[in-house]
Length: 243
Ligand code: PEP
Image (cartoon, rainbow, N blue to C red; front, top):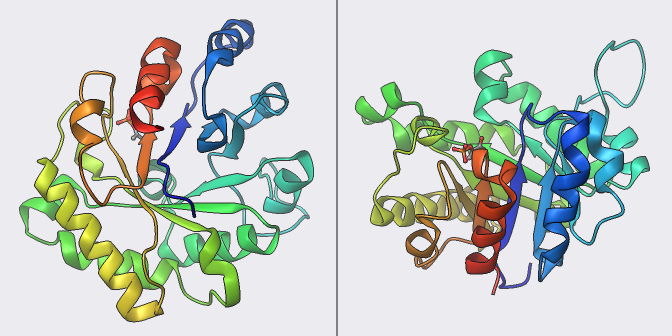
């Protein structure tokens, strides 16, 4: 992976069809768009495919095809020209009860079809208060990243997203983010023998805090939720982070 930071927008279940064309127009000015990924709701993916930035899915199912009503597979997404997939987002782990085993199967499937995987990991507030952050992250990483082989590792990015920071405007101290990213890199290096896995930070990233967050020495980029639906904020984040 190149050294330039990566900025990924997770639009979640936001925006109506009539808002899309203005949003696309507003984002036309993105510079260095090869380091920008946008993950819209899956029904809107076709609108985003012809732009200069990459497109990601917010979720995938781990089977290739078959009787799985409402699901979308990695193979289908790849056949559309989607290049990235978020896997294990805390909203999927929480609301949809996705287990580490499900997440691992999704990662294996995404890699099989050539998608770049963005694995989201992070502790809840309760886990943080019980001083379980390191244990939770280790459990997620060791279980979610099983059975990877060969050059699979070159197509995996981790997003450290403390659950208590998502959509709350409450952020960890910069030093804590740096230390936790160091810990994640250390786990991947020790247990999977892969050095220097890219780790993004996600959680309440905005145009107000991006200059500050961008100074964290070991961060490889940012996963942006709410602010990615506001073109002005998102463009500012990209301008600062992707230099
Ligand atoms: C996210 O959902 O991945 C996220 C980081 O959200 P927000 O930026 O809104 O906190």
